[in-house]
Length: 180
Image 1: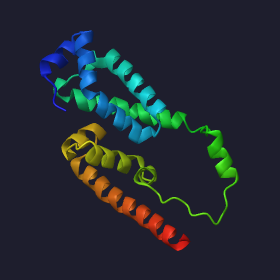
Image 2: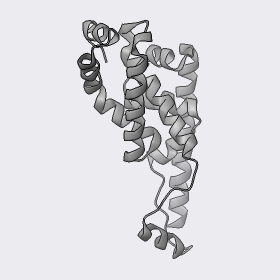
Image 3: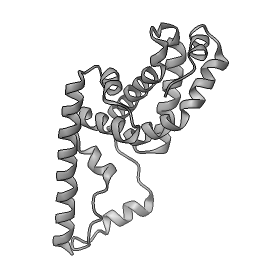
């Protein structure tokens, strides 16, 4: 998202209101990006809160104000991966979900894999490239800057990621047809 550079310069100079205004302009995209990575509302909100804090503390170090949005999303994505790495712990289930899993009959039809589950099967780089390109409509050049990779590498990530995603979805569809 292109921001008014004067507001970005004010935020860099330490103007809290300008920084808050920039965050409000990005809040919806921040939320959906975080949610697409971490999968749970609470974790997404935690990631956004940490991102806002880290961004506020380091905004004075931003060398290219025109890339404020890219810089902010880079912080968010790193924060999401930090939460995911930290979150490789037992995920709490609702009691009804636990009972359903305990009483699971092997001949029940499983739900087909959905797109978000298929995305989780991708490598970090493929997942990031696909989310930024398709969910956030970022151009390849901006994704390249965000991920610190050449544009040709991003194109490869997109191609291979789509190929892998297609395989996952087809595998799930084939499995569910056999079960039915």
